[in-house]
Image: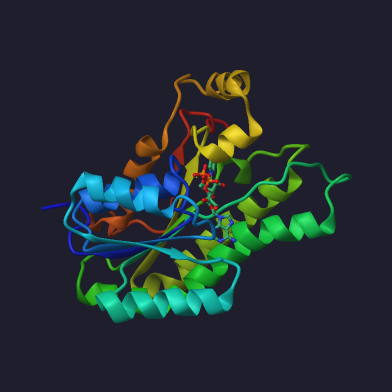
Length: 260
Ligand SMILES: NC(=O)c1ccc[n+]([C@@H]2O[C@H](COP(=O)([O-])OP(=O)(O)OC[C@H]3O[C@@H](n4cnc5c(N)ncnc54)[C@H](O)[C@@H]3O)[C@@H](O)[C@H]2O)c1
């Protein structure tokens, strides 16, 4: 019996090889998910990702669909299509995210809104449009519905050079807490995973090898983390093992957050 046996999940930001979203999809399927609907704005690696997941050989269904998390119409379509094909929704992972480096003086309002749009508004819309279906999950599973937001240690730690990312992740953290309070009575749990350094294409866009080594050494454990490590935290929160867990923040950061 898998840890998310029979569940149906939507995972955003899962359209890039080597990223956290793809690792979460594969982990859910390994743990017996009935279906995983991966979504992303990107589609250029769609076939490679489908081939990779197929090569895992797990029995659950896998779909990869184009979806802009900032679009309400896209959310309506993704939720409707998921329910039409699989008849249920149990887990939502708001994982899509972007970063545009810059401080308060050199970030344009347009760039700030772009980052807020994906990192905060995208998660807000996901919860808004998925909540009614997630509230029915309690009829099937003792853990009820589960929303998992991929936030960041950036939501706690100020940084002078990346204002949009830190502010948007901070807003996404409070969104998690507010939604946990509101949706608890409907038996929808809302939690967050806060990765520290996780070697993915996004990290590689901003840091070279020396930069990643510097990040790794910031944490007490001092070891590199990869998406497959992070995915374990998502499996736990999606599973019925976490039926009493809501509004929680899992720091998946090698101890970086010891002061927060
Ligand atoms: N890698 C790290 O060290 C790290 C640390 C902390 C938090 N995170 C968070 O983890 C999440 C996943 O990041 P990742 O490192 O796997 O990077 P990634 O860039 O590979 O994944 C993010 C995905 O989001 C997609 N995306 C961007 N805008 C979108 C939109 N409007 N609609 C739909 N999809 C969109 C991208 O195409 C990409 O595939 C992000 O929210 C990121 O902020 C990552």
